[in-house]
Image (cartoon, rainbow, N blue to C red; front, side, top):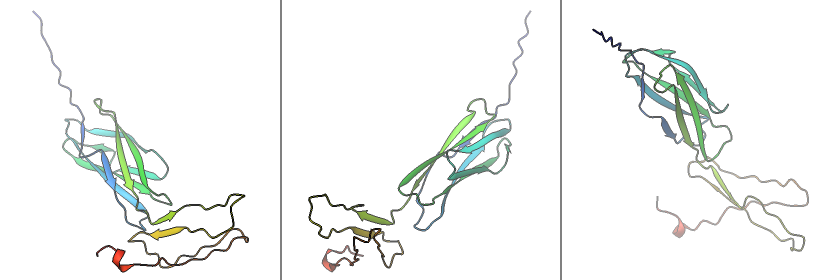
Length: 175
């Protein structure tokens, strides 16, 4: 006669509300903060072994080191904007003792507003080209608090002049 002994092992398991967040900070914001919410849907506590961000401009922190069964929490990821422009994608790696999924990668996508558009970015003259004025267009974003534009030349051989664009009310969008 044989006896069969089945052991049920309690398993820890984090269920994430979302593992990717897209943020749209306003002009002048210094940081963008994402909250990655989770719940321990397993029968055992989940212990965080480590939480690391992909670069020095992003930090991440947990509310606690261990999450009991049925308990909810979040990991807060903070992206320091600095002088960055455009879309920035940063990741946070979360390592737990969950044998089913020991590492989860959280993605923080930050879409930074364009404050100024400059076109073209550079002007230059070729050796055969006549030295005549060239124009660079600078436009401030709608919410950008720009009032004046000062431009200087790095070379005393070049003079610069700022002229406001001529605004045609008929061409302006309805507001």
